Image 1 (cartoon, rainbow, N blue to C red):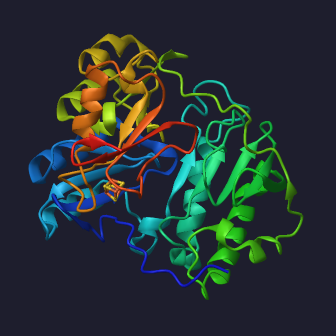
Image 2 (tube, rainbow, N blue to C red):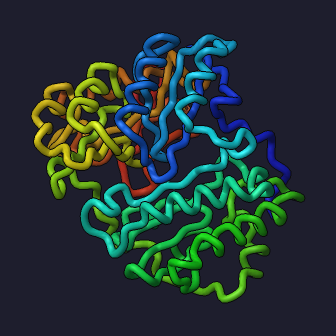
Length: 360
Ligand code: SF4
């Protein structure tokens, strides 16, 4: 059994994190699903109150940072007015990643409705407010792009009717029809919320004793042997772009909202999918967004590093720019300012630790 953990410090709007560069707030978007209007409104608020860039997260969310230590009430109210937080108690547990292209192109099923239903069910279940902020649900539409990540509970579609419920990762699960998936996920999450009380465990994989009690659980191949990469460029009429270092500037948001007026998807790879936006690809790339896999920016990521994080021993972003400029990104690369390696990809990559301007 895991030892008793320290406090859960995952940030949210209602619990900002005091970073070196000011307060940081993290906003969740189940399945990465949002709209151009919401993105535009958040970009305007970021520009008004703090660092003007929106920071994309590896859970398909957004962070605003460099905000006043005491959040201005008008900022909090403006974000609440966007309808992003419908339950204060559940704010930090609505962590749902889904295949970003589901319902747009490929996959075995359109899981956008399932994302909505699972989010609704989480909000409706008071006991799930006790889940840790690190707990993660994954909904994979069968293509295997997100079921290979580290997660707690998940569902991988086999077709539009049937799928596999995944427990503690992609290796253990049991068959569940899609119409029962939400109930099954919520029931297991509720059981985990009770089982973790003694230890404060953050993840299902830490409670192997509890996992062993899950009825019908057995080995499964929920994790794809060779997970597909997010395609960039035109995808079934949509524009799929990577956001260099996950930092979305106000100018880029302006272009995005001109190209796609309606729904859009934030990807767990710090990119955006704009349904129907393929005609705007040249404008998107002119703004610095990336639409081809041969760009080094499609293959490099970095934690926020110095001077934004007190743990950092060096400027990860500056070194990332340097590596790109000197053509030194020949494979997936992640730069970290300390051993915690925040945001590092789960798949094979070049791991760079930055210490006082040097690479370790
Ligand atoms: S990896 Fe270290 S330096 Fe980078 S953001 Fe995380 S804690 Fe900060």
